[in-house]
Amino acid sequence: MAERKVRSLEELGISSTILKKLQELGITTVEALAAANAQELSQNLAVPLPTVQKIISQARSVLGLGFRTALEIKKERLNLPKITTSSKNLDALLGGGIEVKTITELFGEFGSGKTQLCHQLAVNVQLPPEKGGLSKKAVYMDSEGTFRWERIESMARALGLDPDQVMENIYYNRVVNSDHQMAVVEELKDLIPKENIGLIIVDSITGHFRAEYPGRENLTLRQQKLNRHLHQLMSLAELYDVAIIVTNQVMARPDVFYGDPTVAIGGHVLYHAPGIRVQLKKSRGNRRIARIVDAPHLPESEAVFAITEAGIRDPE
Image 1 (cartoon, rainbow, N blue to C red):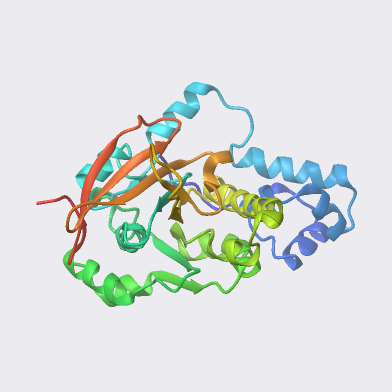
Image 2: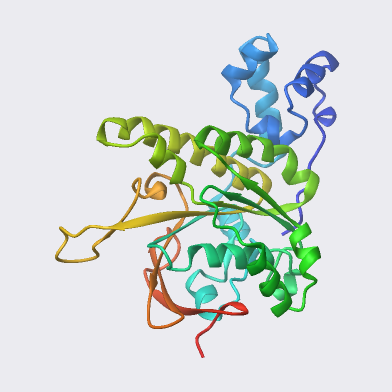
């Protein structure tokens, strides 16, 4: 698939007055304009709603976000680049690797390999396409303090990459609460095109929401805010052709006698969002089991991978 260029707003023929106001609001690319909310923008620009709707619609059509045939969508999906996980088993399970323009949710209990996989992907996205990467950089949003540069270093060395260069290409942010987490995602609209970002990791997506909105009485509020956050991420995935990984903890439910006694904390965030949900489980030793729980285009199945000194690999 041809790389989509970030086009300038000037090319849309917007009046210089509106252009100046858009830039003051931090909307400097066609992608950012396409993702804007018409109602809010109309108020912020003090410009009539129909005018704003027209320029947003122009931006969307330039990016090919209008009507397309199902065949065009099929062809685009088949050609979407993917990021290797460094495990052939896991790549096969995921239909070739982690897909761009998609949110992939990794959920599992503590120690099931979610963060290890995130670290591996932050390294692998930097590989050239012929080696399963995108030749791009990564953003790592850490809500629980689980990021380890030492792990990045050993994974980079195992792939024959310069560890310092690899770490230079990972933009790390320790997010301190849910508002900060959402604000960082807004900032990414500028960072993605400027720094050639191909992967965004949110580890974990539910941590702060869970802590700030405890109990059943806050459940509706929490889910509404989490949904808003997901829609932010979905629009980044779609507009900028990036892959998005979110992790989610699970807790054990001792009252469940049949079936799986683990349940995602904060609910499965992707129940109501398009994407791929992958459950990770501990197995013997360094082995882990990944299971596709929900993906519109992939069959429900399992794969075994291993967490080694070198990173994510197939079991020996």
